[in-house]
Length: 175
Length: 175
Image (cartoon, rainbow over all chains, first blue to last red; front, side, top):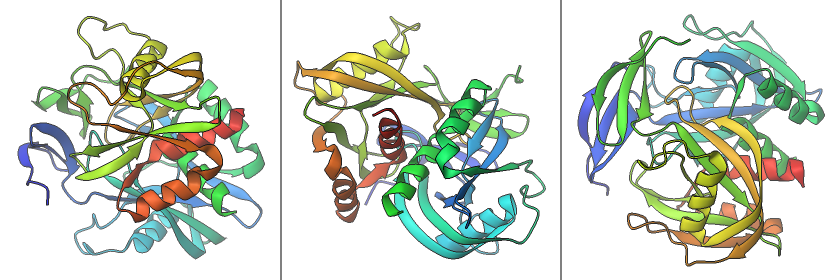
């Protein structure tokens, strides 16, 4: 068992803590993130684009979100959280889910863990775009064109979340 | 230009800040990380293993480290930082460097940016193992066996840093 962490400061969503002299950050609600590599029946992957204040840039990401962060469902499963976020952000519902890997998001800085899930048998059932606090653009990119698409996004000044490439790698290992 | 961030609290290495109502974490020294996908002449990739207090687990990572965090070299280049960390952690020196991508590490939580670099023409020139505060085990894994090796590490209770898979993906796109 790890020693409990000492709280240095806390905002509504984050907590700066220290354990054995090492400081890091925790979310106040959960340390679990579900990240979705979603492939449509026509071979496209779903990418989202949103402005992120910490990096002050538009970032290309996989559909993703916190799991168990809503007060009424603290024991939410990873699959439930993943399906909720995929639908909110992209409007898609998946018929098939598979966990691919459990990843440390940034293990020197936070206790956040990202579970990467593959979503297939996709069916569009809503508008997407995120919840009332989000302003998300959805891109459907043919898998064979994704490397060039991402390279162009970077040239256009957008940042790429590292988990996009991690998800694409894990997708290749199972397809 | 982004509005400046308001400091909520600060430790020696981290700063909890808020910008436009969004809280996130910054390092006090730098927001730049160099992460190295290093391939030996015999086709092995270098992975490192170290205990990480935030996740309270042993984590498999790529050689990586902060750039420009040392007081005497605040303007350190990404390549210099990458070479320094690769040598400290693995004992290898690379004859050839190439930047593959600039990634947002965890863009909802921190302003940290990870530059992924490919290191080739490797030559062993030191013991590795990290600096005086680190206790790092180096693994040289044949590229064709890396998926199984990582799956076994996960079964053995180790966590995988998502940047390992991102680096492997980017390696494939250039080889």
